[in-house]
Image (cartoon, rainbow, N blue to C red; front, side):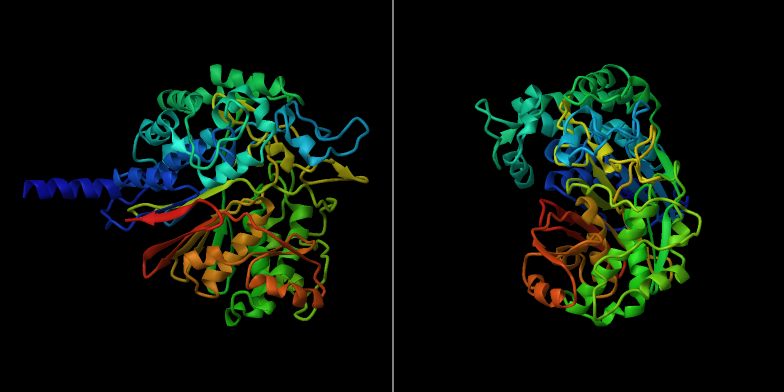
Length: 563
């Protein structure tokens, strides 16, 4: 009897934590969806030890920094939504990188005042933003963590020290990588003595990263933003081929931001996501609002009608994104006006079921914004996404990134530094009009990351989703959300759907059956069509009869696992 009582006390302790209601809760199924099986296993282990979804997210992220270094890590940033089930509260954490205070609007212009080519802008120190990841995770952990900070690093440190087999996605990225070999430290880890990239299945270790993780584990996130680690980061950035202005003061003064989630409705659901400077959820909500009148629930996945309508709504949303979205601490972003039902009805009226508009102009959600239309640079499809639900029903949906594959290629203490500043518009103005996403000191660049949650009429969570994939994140999250809400697909079916994407240019069709058969019919409707491979990166959980059902994009190495 005594052992039973002790067990019950432990169970109640595991499902009750800071910020939760004081009443005992029934333990619920847990689940972790992330881009690598070892990261998923680390998250599940934390949950089994009574950790919260936030605790598990930190453990997952640290393992991803080891086994998926090309996509995310300590040298980057991200956006995280935390849903407290007991309180019914969403908290949006902005850990986006910021431009150093030495950055100017001309950062990516050549001596003649012309924008640099993207590959030239990426490499080196000038593209590195102040990393926000660790400070954001520390802030969120202080509010939602159950386990001690130091407990969350053991799986990643063990892998970095004892080694791991190169997973398929990292192996393919290394096979195509040349610039990273300029770093002697990176070359020693990821390439053979003869300069050949480590192959899929080869065992590698990363002792410098293990040492960095141990420091952050024992001294906290502050150890990253001052002291020897910060000094080495600044030294690498200032000594790079295109030096950056990142300083010790920039690192010491970085602060994450807690923002109010942006929310909208679609049919009987309420959807919420990360607000600007992320453009992703705002664009997804706009597209859904424009599509509602067409009743996509009566269509089938991969039908010509649904693909055409999704592409046209995406085109209109990207036109507004390009003109109006930037860092709300620097520019006015009319998010609520962009989601106003009357405005979305006006935009939806531009969609013709029988003919593509081919190119969309931005709308006028408010009359007095004078920004110039800015297509901006395309975000590169690196990045990673995870979704986690703990035993109390709390949920994390978290997109994390260093931007391009292997970021800036600057390698410091076992980690890669981001190239996030290339998400700014390279030119500060067009004609006399300033661009909303121009470079400014201390500013966060616009993003497409789209961690999102969906609730039914009764307020129950039905979907948590997000994706990697650069600017194609928006289309992927939109299409998978429609797959769940309109077509009642399983989570795995929804993330595996063949992809259609439109960024107000050509309609991109993933070149697999049955979707590629729609290329010619779409051209007949007036679309310029491009058949292409798709990087993918979706991760999601939907709830069916109260139980979580996970899905991980089959195009990557991820898995969905629970108890």
